[in-house]
Image (cartoon, rainbow, N blue to C red; front, side, top):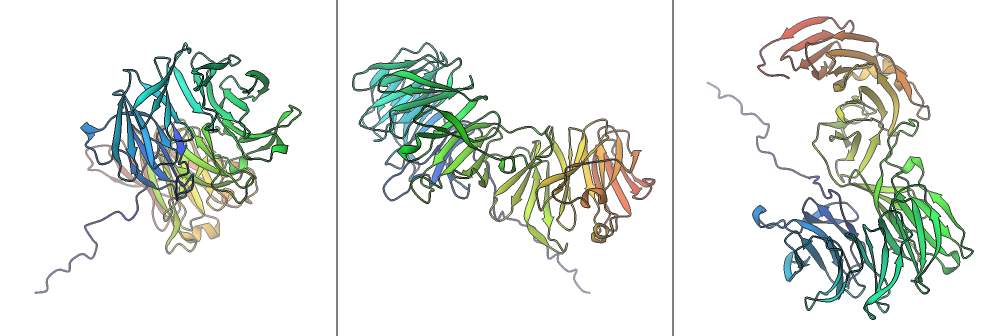
Length: 549
């Protein structure tokens, strides 16, 4: 008697590549230059209560600072600063300790006890010797990181200190701080006193920057203005209206004859490049175009903007002294958008964090016989991720006004259909990454979607997709109208070709048969129903589940 054949399918699986979260909001800092390593090769950012160190080119997580510690041994880190000229980082934790870490060995090499108040911000001087901290006790303190003692303690702020930044010229030994009292103060560490106070903001300053010659301080905040402060005379020289809350401001390398060239990013989700000429005329000279924003659906004027929460400049990635610098815009969705300074064109994007993954699909190859290099995912967001499965680089599709619940991809890999809690289904062209059609008609949120599986249906124009909703109905839509549109056309509105009350509760799952003749639906009412795809008539009911499907 012949023994039964063993299954050739492996029962033991190991991950080949993992896309882990690297950022959950908070501070982001590019690595400073140190011997043998160029600046900006990596960056550090907050990941939950830890600090993640990330490869700036690929976005791959290199390590987290406390990865080797047990959960009960980990400290809740509030802020950090990378140390210039060293492979070190200093962190501030809820337990009122400053710790200096060696990033090579990932070990703590020095601990400094501070006052029993949270430290919210910190910055190193250009030499890497002094570290300034701002805390909720309204004090600005400066520590000698090598010897471990306080060198300065400034107490003039009347609110929580939210920002500290050293002057880039180490010889000047000046420090700038901002507070909830809406002031920006300039401190001289040699004279050990305040030498300037900017009281011209109506809200706390969110960012400050120094001009290339070091004689002008730029500050901005959520009061929608940019102030220019003369550090020699300690007077306000100009205020420019920005028309949006500014969260990030960086001064860009430029010839002295160009005046001050800087970039801003804020609530409108657009990076702008400004120029302040010697004649004190300040104007926008370039703006990030909609083609390079996170919203690919540019024809939908109702699409929400993704705000920026920070802006950094990576001067190490440049082709010459003044051109080709890379800008890093941090979004409120915890992603990193990398732009070329000269053109403000997006060069790549790094996904900082994936929430719950609600739907994940491979994109087939054009002939339907294999897989392409891409996967699509819905991750508890109103945006859809289109990822390269080899490099994990990513594009985002925006247009839905609420969380995307389900995705389906056509067998030729050209079309993506999505279902959202906003009550609409959208059809996306995966070649151009644009929304070409919107289907509205359900009374409640959508929870499931499926698309024709027969490759011939797309050539013959008979392809369709089907949606299921919390309103207990199922609707069928013809894909031919959307697929016939040229790629440059505006988004069209689809009408349902057929509809039926499918279940007594939410329709949570849908599938189309390989021959496109039948549709299966699963519901919270514990039933699976089989439908004729042409008439939406029930041809069978499967019972037996004890819980909702």
